[in-house]
Image (cartoon, rainbow, N blue to C red; front, side, top):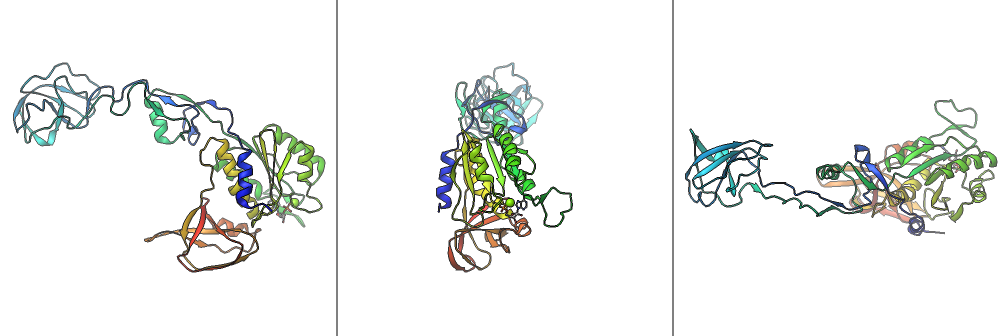
Length: 398
Ligand code: AMP
Ligand code: MG
């Protein structure tokens, strides 16, 4: 049986970033990945400017605490009209251009003004409180590389260089298809033998959080024709199709068969992990298909371990994850599992830093246990008995 790492490698090997598209730079572009490098078309700052309210002076005049004649006042957004000569100074506000002749600024608080004469309380060195032209970036310089993630600061920088659109990776389209004859949609009350469909909303939310444009296809019944029709639609209009249920070896688990009929090539169908062993992965062209087992924890873990990394790689991220971190246990942890296990955990912050505590869960149907968790703890196969403080491999998920 495949190990989790081998299965992830197969998934990522089949995942291609999509064709980049022109993207408007609104807050909705947050988290998208640049598919071009961006060059500045101007020097920034565009002129040498003061970073203080004070007086622009010639440092050559100000080797001691001299008195200088104030010849002009320049606010931010205004331009100096006079060149500073020997014995002269100009009052400048924060952000104002430095007048010709001056090479330094002395802050207002370190001076004394009488009429139009300013007394400096100290000598001033060349360059003090002045940002030279082009210090941040020069015209023609590459300021953002291809592969940069659009963060608030990056969106700000793109505006500073005059961009309103960029070429970026598109948002992957992901279809969610819960399957099962026993499912009813909330708010309907489950009849005998029925349960509410909780995986549909959970997977839609996981997909949205992972940066996908998620489309809900509705429940597919355990019937070959119904399943085929729904999946045909889902495959035609999606980069990723995520099914829940119907992938085990049960009598009505038609998903793998129907996918094969629709031209989906199967790459694996079982992983040595708990929860979520019967996880199906296939492709049709560049579309990825994940069949997650129906138990809520199995669906959740399968999504975080395989679907989310595929989504991120498709979105252009250099590191698709999942990124596990080593955290000390907040309490002892004992477990016995026949397969490597991803158990719900809770992150805690104390004065000693972050720790993780194993959450109570009774198995892969325990959605309530999962709802109280915000991490998955990776445990090896076999029996383990860890003391408090033992470092465990942890995947934060919320
Ligand atoms: P399956 O993988 O179809 O054999 O389903 C495994 C278990 O998960 C069964 O107990 C199902 O009733 C349950 N299950 C399947 N789909 C869902 C769903 N969408 N929401 C909640 N539970 C589900
Ligand atoms: Mg089922």
